[in-house]
Amino acid sequence: MKQGDLTLYSLPHYLEGPLQMLTQEMKTCMNILKFHRFIYQPHLDTDPLRCGPGFRVCRLGKAGLQHMLLKSTILKNIPEELMWMLTENVPAVGVYLDPSVTKEVFLDIQNLPYAGDNEIPVSWISPIVIGTLGMLGTEKDFRRLGHGTLVTRVAARLLASKGCIPHCHVTFTNAASKEMFKKMKEWEQSHTGICFKSVDNVFKVPKFI
Image 1 (cartoon, rainbow, N blue to C red):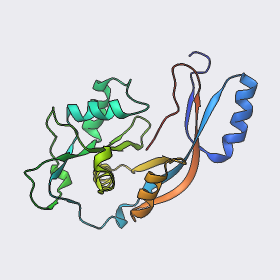
Image 2 (image 1 turned 180 degrees about the vertical axis):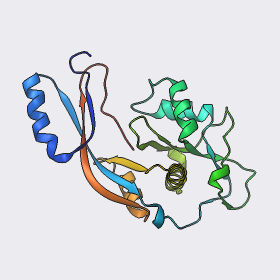
Image 3 (image 1 turned 45 degrees about the horizontal axis):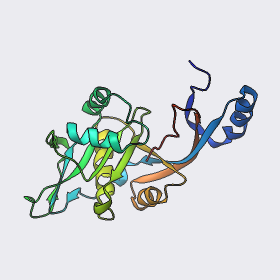
Image 4 (image 1 turned 60 degrees about the vertical axis):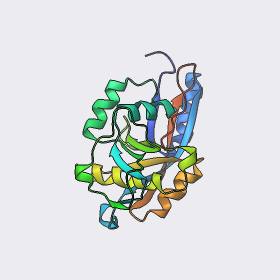
């Protein structure tokens, strides 16, 4: 390991001071990322999942996965094959344009199809390598339509159905995502935390949501 190649995820906030002292003693530079942690409460998720006309919800196909990685600030250099293996077991989800859908549709998440390999989603979310849901994104022209909320709810139910405990880290500076999670009754804020990441020409501060 090179000096400075260090990332510490999901630490309690009270460790911020001691870690700053440690980095000073090591004569290295670290970025601090502060986040809110939200945990999914399945017993509170009682509303049906519905997708409006003109759209459909699918598991990400290959083009969708590539698009999500391209838009990501931290995982674009992760091998696509690795992410594909991850999302085969813990699905990545997207909302896709579909003019053939003429009315609202109730979703059956246990039979959610894959999108076509050439289709690009307008909104997406995926599990990431540190175990949280992340990389939530929506194309600019399709924001404020509820797509981010929908993919988050679908992904959470899929993860919960596999025995996982869905959770998300939302950075202090991401007011839009924080507001979205606070509006969903099935997500509860549990605590705040920090992430330390080394600063050099290779690493960037991670973006969770």
